[in-house]
Length: 253
Image: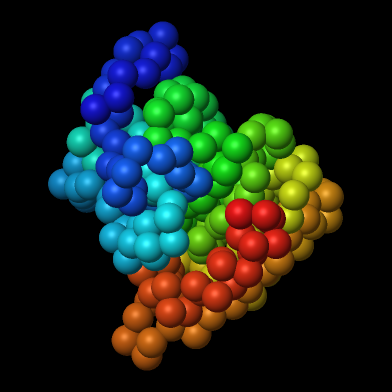
């Protein structure tokens, strides 16, 4: 539990860490979680996010992986309030006036916790990468754009803030992705076919918005096993491992 001060309150955020044996310092991935489906099942809010397959892939290559949970999620203190409908039982809102402030709130959590995580003695700050899944993916892109000199690389797994089914999804997702355009290094975007939240065609439009704003990177598509939702490709390193390894090598990592 890591104490942070955000929005004028001090709360403890839950953090899971995977690291190789020894004291390091290790190259480090800070990886951010996504949503809880539609946001209408409050029992899911406290469920820890621990993508073991992804963490083990990095750990086997000498990396530490740090998984912070934002306020009200995964055992963290505080209220979970990332863009809900006024009637919270209805889950996340498609209204940009409610949804986008929720994304900004999430970014403030990341702003607060990242310096504390990077100060850990096992972290090699010169070899720091940021990444995330779903909502964590678009937060990764936006946060990297605000801190162009901090991470050496940024990895976006199936990123987006609101599902394509929202009629206003483009008004929400594209502006968030455009925030990442000021990151000077190429980003790695990884998306799966048969994603129940974002079709590949829709996600390509988000990447185009990112590129049109000046963003650099590559958009990569993967076909998951037949019974797997493409939104969860992060759990299948056999799909993306070579792409990630090549990307890290190209970035001198």
